[in-house]
Image (cartoon, rainbow, N blue to C red; front, top):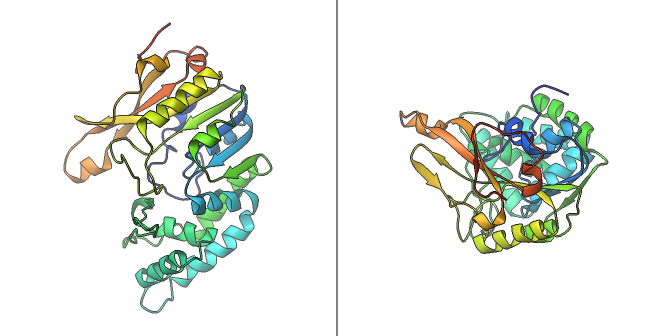
Length: 300
């Protein structure tokens, strides 16, 4: 089960490249992985590739995104066929591929939010970055340098991901707190909420922001019920820091992960390393080996 972890499509903020580092803090075997902020489910895919969990729960407040995951896993052939049709249309579309993107985006915003339309917009938009207006309209622009994920490459990855997760995965699109309340001992909750340094009261990927105090209360509840969890939460790039540490009284282990050189900094002629922080729950920190970059922010 070694090798590169497949992905459905490029997605900004994906933890796919960090998955090998993050999974060091997961048990080798456990009952169910719950992702309340699934995005494109990079960690779930990585865990399922290694067959660590029996079951999976994928949740995201962005329902069209969840529908992409659901169709990719449960009906991969249908998604591949529909996506291939949309992707191929841009090659001969009157006005060119850019005009085709805006047509699909208009269709999506007018109510045709099928999985294939959402997937095409993700595959073709700038940096695979989901963005919505205050009225809930998808408003990201197309990447003019590329045509989006080739259907043949997408098909190979989607079929592989489906083979890992079909028949083992449930899907929801609701508030993260409701999802975490469903966790039971033996589950692992992995949370990757909207980046602190980018959003506060509202995040354009999720329609609403994540309140810091509410989030801390959610973590306290997981601790109280003995639920294992791992959280990607804050970080830094060069001298710039994003967000604040989670409270010491949560009893977590903070680990600093090297995410490599910042592509944005390189464009500006700088070489700055991106560091992302991982918080590990009390029980899990006791079962994993120490790692060089760890910072204990609380010790019994």
